[in-house]
Image 1 (cartoon, rainbow, N blue to C red):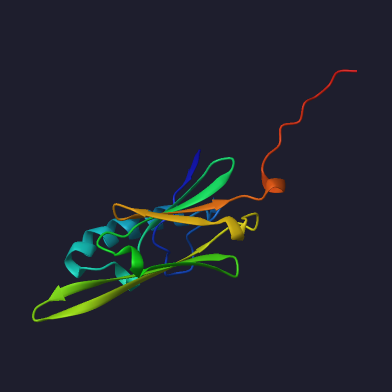
Image 2 (cartoon, rainbow, N blue to C red):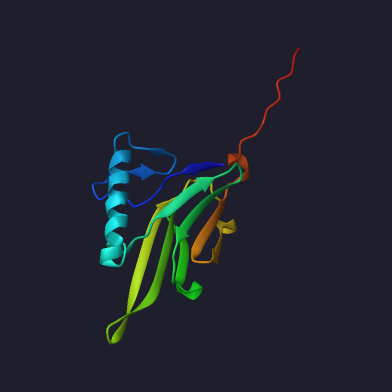
Length: 148
């Protein structure tokens, strides 16, 4: 299984994309992540209403994993739109006298070889896992070499 590190997008337009990296953006992403997580406790919510996701893959599937603590399963929406996976979530938070609704969203590029009609999502213990199965023709095939 191969793990693809994918966290907060970089506001300058450089950063990690599916299947590879921009050469100098990795250290910038790590620094952004470091300050983003340090300040998240002070600010209360992730910046821009986004949440970090992890991408990883094996020979049959690509997986998108998102941590959404405190979110009700009914308040999560997952869609595939124009070659991207869209995840929306919301939760209610009490503040002072009232109750506020906090919304989160994330758009993740997915590979073309995904079977969109067989995508599945599971939510357990605050973690959303979306399984994106690959098309048969996109899976690697072992070819035997014969000797003449």
